[in-house]
Image (tube, rainbow, N blue to C red):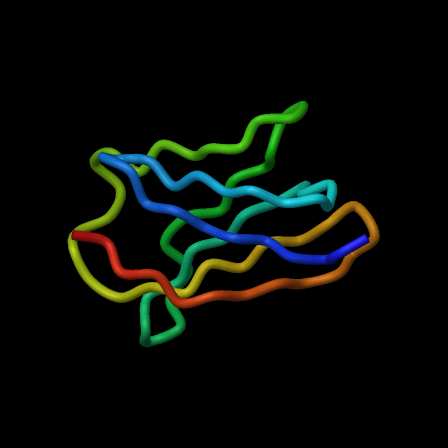
Length: 77
């Protein structure tokens, strides 16, 4: 089993594919300020970004049910 999480930006949503049970998604700007904290419900694999984020570079942190952390830089247009 791979422990990969891949994030994709589509329109005003962030989607991900993963073989892990993601419980929480946090988005930070490059100054470290928390922009969004979203609990993932059920098997949802997307978070709506509309009106929450302006274009730029961000860091997404995903926490699994086992308390593991995966982070990735993303660019939002």
